[in-house]
Image (cartoon, rainbow, N blue to C red; front, side, top):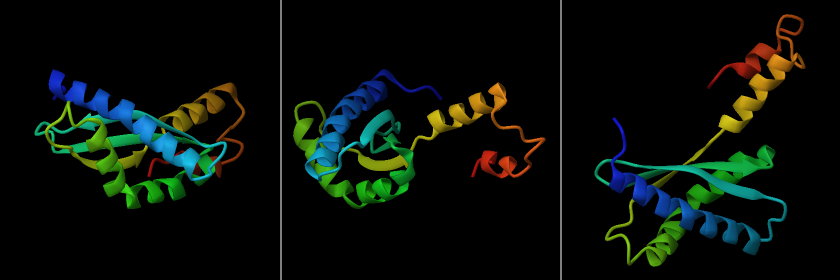
Length: 131
């Protein structure tokens, strides 16, 4: 089912403000060289839950940062509510996920270029399985 205009608008408002909140928290926390990008925000039909997809660079500590973000969800939600109080009556619950689509595309590109050959090295196949 396609998203309504209202869902899209709320998603884009949350996306813009989440970028500011998360990147600002990362720099205030002393994390240098880390980029947190909000690639997509999908809001449910009843506008009660927002699924937030994050791309975190460098990728090697993305899971640790995601856990930190999940543990601070109430604070992030409060900050977003303060920023969007004139646009939204109720702030949706936030659910955070890692968006690994760029990594997946990179692996496909490397396979097509011949850098990784699963026929010569069968151990590569385990990396490609989607979990």
